Length: 518
View 1 (tube, rainbow, N blue to C red):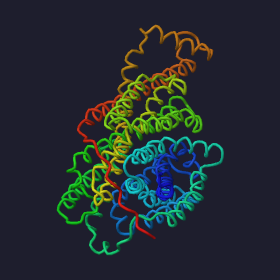
View 2 (cartoon, rainbow, N blue to C red):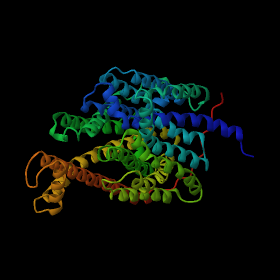
View 3 (cartoon, rainbow, N blue to C red):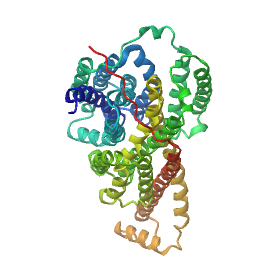
View 4 (tube, helix red, strand yellow):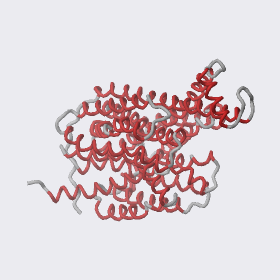
């Protein structure tokens, strides 16, 4: 008979940790569709609003790699409980923010305090489950990692439209308190070792924080300031490069580094990190591009945008039971190739986007994107992290999860650059053909001008209005073509990732360590 009591002892704390990880991942994007409302409520300038999201990402991407060391110092139980409690308090501070500066500071605090919950959620699946049960746990954490960012704009848009932006942060209070209390009561994995504080690699921590923080700033802000034409971007890029090289040297020569870069000698883990990076590009970039297209090209509200992209989340959930069934019968590498290839096909379908696309036209490409996400993410967890020894797992999990977030930051930055440069390129190409010799254009301009009461051939207010309308149409079409180029670029990344999957070795799940008695 199955050990029902033992199953529940593993399942309940795992559910608690997954819920905390879901909260932290959800809040990355929960403000995405509501930034204009937050900016309006806090009287923020246009160039300050994006920092509500950027501050969270910078703080999170710095702390995630440190989570393995922090877990060994404070234990899984107390680190996760402290993270959940701190995340909850920081959420309330965000809701009470009185200006944009305080909001940015509190969002950074929220990202920093909640970051450790994400890698702990991943590593806990290897502790609580063994054998075939790891198929289920990997599917769960893979689904959370892929669906939480997708649901963020949907939930955020609904909350903002029905209440106000303050509730984007109030909603974390009750779940945060529940997760904190249940973590203390249920989670028993390891014991704290405060002696590690004495021998920690503090220079390595500082170098890593400087490198990742400045790199994230360059990626998030580069497109807005025309990249290296801006002195601040140039200086940050140099700082990131120098600090990053020094951090790598330090981590490979110091006996007890905070991030285990030596784990990259394991081929499965190295390839898994790259595949995690690519899935981060896909998940976060498409979440960035689709609402942007619907908002600027189609003029959708936050809630309309959320509804239009909801099919991605629904398709992701529908893929979970299918993956679980297939993962018990087939080599997970084949399933991963299917997931990555399907994501690439969805990007190819997105590349046919036109300015008339709405929820109906987006449905099939979004299903193609959502359904295979668990096929792309869950095997990377099983094959990448599952190939490491238990001693290495905690330190390496932070690096693995950081790669997904870093992929998202790189993907968004590259897509932003593509939108800027290719929109101008396509606009020039379109306007090149808008001459008096273009009969269709001339008839359209004269038709619009006549509606304003203008005389044919005269350059008065009616014709000026018609030319403005023509400019807007040309810019809309140029923007749409630039979105298609961005989706093409993501497709290329997924083709490369699909071709790398055969380099992975199949992993036989090792027996989980026995739980300590309490």
